[in-house]
Image (cartoon, rainbow, N blue to C red):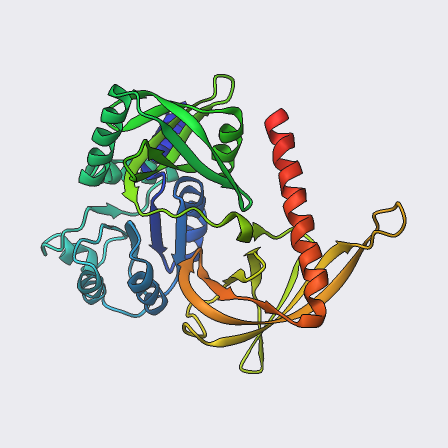
Length: 368
């Protein structure tokens, strides 16, 4: 029971946080990587310093867990490189007894925790919890909680904004309670289903024009009471209802061509004019504004008489990269999308089908 409680504590503290974990010992790496996967919202795993440093400079994760000894670099120089990228980096070092580990005890590098191997998974859970407790509840969260407390006291209108696979879901809700670290709200049935799907929410308070983003901590489905943590102000613009970016279904296949090369990639979501693609590579192969060629494959209805048979079709499209961003262990690429004129009818059929399918799926979740 103690082990379960310790891990639940870590999950609560790490909600919405990212971690970059580097360890060259593959056995130790595999033994504890499930802790990171199950606790943190985003996990980046590496076995070598060069890849880890390159990715760190792009994503600047909330926590860096560094296994020593390193494969090639000197640990002191590597940490100095990290500090140059991010002077406020939160670093935890796990190591056996070696010269670098001993030296780190004497140099003020601002290491949050120096942990000696061997250690059990439960020991690691406790160490990580103590580290995150030291960084918990920064100023931005306190400001947002104070703002929400003012909303509660004045009984102002609260609008929750979520989506389900790209379909916007918005409805009113009320703040039930606010404590030092979290707040609870009463949600409508439709919002409860959307919040459960996304594990976070964006809420707007009255006519203030301010939006607060927060992560779902727990959900009492019977009472429709949700508890959120880590609230912070964000800039937020609701996506146009006429151009929803929908999560593709299992029939969707993607062919991605760049500079006459076929790149392995997977579509995340799609709209009539844009597509979001995941590429599982350490470095992004292109930059913004570059042109790409795409082949999209999917099922559509043939609508033969009264039947609704489905066939697989392919359409051809061109795109231009709008932006790239680190995502999981690779990159998410957002691109414009221009489907060949001869294929537009089939593509629009797929988008319409996808939207109706997602809406029906969401209605089922709400009724259940």
